[in-house]
Length: 70
Image (cartoon, rainbow, N blue to C red; front, side, top):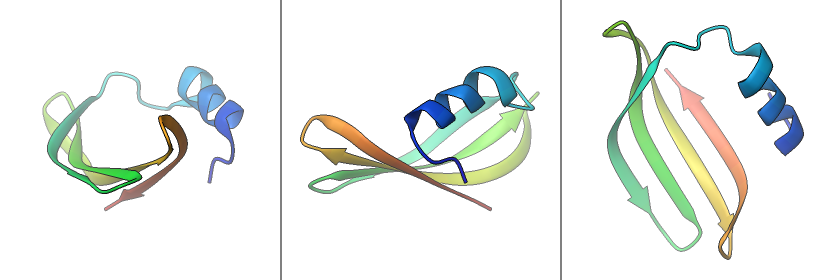
């Protein structure tokens, strides 16, 4: 679990174990304050895992992100 913006940015910049990957978005779902994206993470064309990212908004500002993987 990564808590907070600073911790997430640190992970993405410095700690990600795999940097040569491709996110394939398969579908996008929205409601009043959330956007959910379902997709697949690939490396060299091979499926690593499927994911759902849920972006939570407070007005026009993103206030949270939850990621689920399979």
